[in-house]
Length: 118
Image (tube, rainbow, N blue to C red; front, side, top):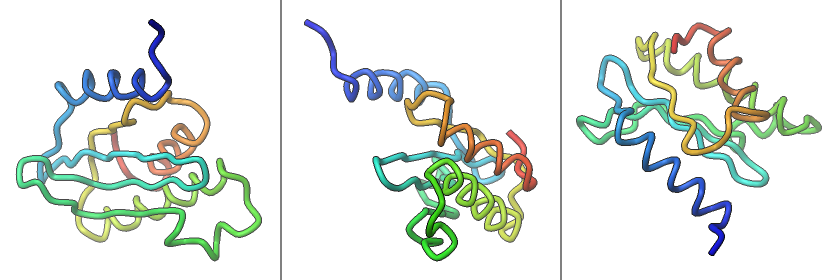
């Protein structure tokens, strides 16, 4: 029986999360992508806390009239600013089972160009 897209993504997510883990010095940058919005969190897996978060809902005024790839780039820029304010310069990128393509790629490249290293 064929697996659905959601089951496939969850399998990839579980496989990656076995290896990828964030610490306070190098948190995990986890991306969530829905049909309309995109959000990202910097997570310390050791303590189980979210250090910083950014979403296209938070910056809705800047996102008005832009396509979803441009919105993802703005979210990447916002998370990079929040991370540098908290003194975080390096992260571990967790694409959460999504393909590194389109909005996920745009967010990652924007975060890199604004000072995050991963």
